[in-house]
Length: 116
Image (cartoon, rainbow, N blue to C red; front, side, top):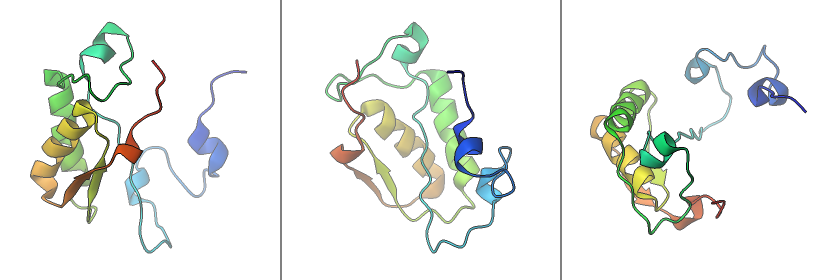
């Protein structure tokens, strides 16, 4: 089995473009936007950390990615940020939220499964 573009498989291309999915029209009353955390040391080393009690701060690049996320989402009428317990996710959300200025909650149900 090869690599697939899951967005293309799950949603026909005439419904969603890959280049600017935030601008796609929607009939939903609310949208949920998922974002991955910024780069952190384990990404650089190619290892996995799936323990939320082992904290790693974002790298400088990860911090820049988080700020860019906030800028990218500033016109999207974000109402709430929900983040996992992982420090990298909380830091990403905090930096993005400097632009968005919305309520932010940490919920362990957003944690990834223990995969490491």
